[in-house]
Image (cartoon, rainbow, N blue to C red; front, side):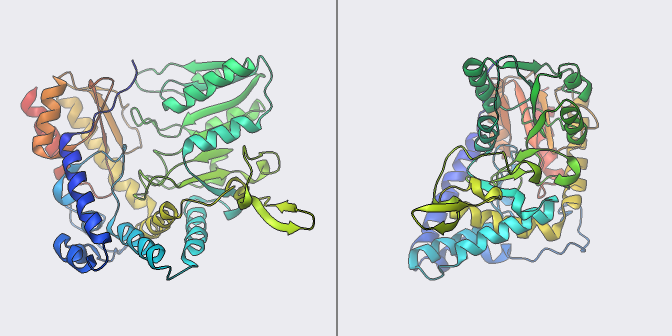
Length: 427
């Protein structure tokens, strides 16, 4: 069945109200009024990584996410809300662009975001590019490889839909075999991949954390498997980065890409793309432009950027880059280890309690990720309305039969209890 996602009407209403307020704030002379009316000043509270916080706000970040005052927002796996510091950074970006006050800010944001990302995720700055989307990254990898009929790609059914579209087209154009592994009880093991990987396998592709049920893959073991067969590993990290600490060098993944708008709490349009250094020589961009120029030479000749920056072929979407820069600065002092400790434990509690209510769990037990997914077995329209009425935001997939919740750093047990309370009244 083709997955279908339904947004709660409550979420839509709140988005429209917030958008209207944001539009007011953007008008000349209206900033002070908007700040007073929306209480922005109280959001600007410093986050202390060493502080001790109560159970209502274990990481001390809830005041930086105004959505938490209005909703039990458990829909971060769809779109993460902006934090107040990121919103403020975007406001400054808009003012700078409107008034042309600081012409160096965009370049500083690019450099800052690249440096902070590399520091947080164990990469070298030369291995990091900023693309528009994760789809761009996987297309770059596939288009740079030389394919022969009979080559194969191994992936599994828990992947995001873009990957299937991409490799079906590759199958049609190049005669490449697409090997899709079925999941068993929400799990796809390294052994499942090994059973389908051989000397003609060129690429393994996984969603580091599945968007469907939050299953988290053993990326280092999959990288070893791929390399033992002379293949590469690509990981879609959009549901992974920002949810647990990782060192990209240690994982041995060849290519990985995420985006700012989910667990970084930034915006659409800035997708960090990691390319392991040893692949930079042969991995060629799929398009060309002025952004790749490292040096201009006589006669309209150029020396091109040899780093991952060569994939930034044109002007970047600087607003989203500014948002990512601010988001990473916000996350770094909190600590990815603390974020994982809080959110994974809360997700495990939600899984346990939903299971106890008789839900058919799609997320496997003891799964270290932020996403919990289950078939609720209830009337979708009634459940969706009840969640709207209670101010609970989640995602429905598989024509409404599958409920997916994403636990973010600002969530607490009360948010989870609001979701469970609605289900409990309906079972």
